[in-house]
Length: 146
Image 1 (tube, one colour):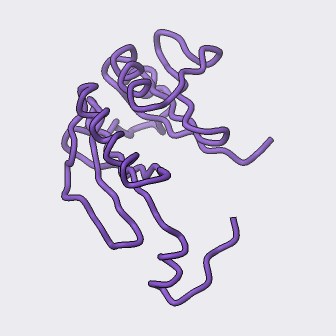
Image 2 (image 1 turned 30 degrees about the vertical axis):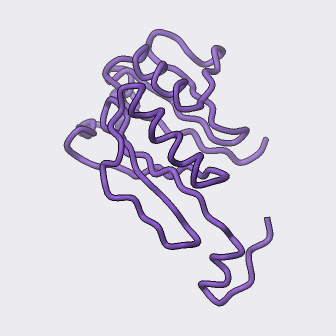
């Protein structure tokens, strides 16, 4: 099995969250989804598990609370895209699907372009495009092998 990451997010409404993530390009994996959870696939090795808050709580260490993602940033999740236009498109799709676009100013470093949006539960995503050759030039280094 390839090394993978499964990001688990507490959500208020699994169906609403599922529709949002489908609208921004994720695919629902029905085998690992039910009324308490939706497994949303980003790539062969990256998935986001949308867990009803009560179900999410069953995985927490004793005494720990679920962060209120509307007022607390527990993590920033960066998604890579193939172009600046694709970054702009997913931010627009997020806004159209009930998220909040541009929760911070866009960042344009020339070789890297990013924006940010929040899903309906307040989880922050940072879609970005990076030109690796331009980044290597800017950093004075050879680009890393893929």
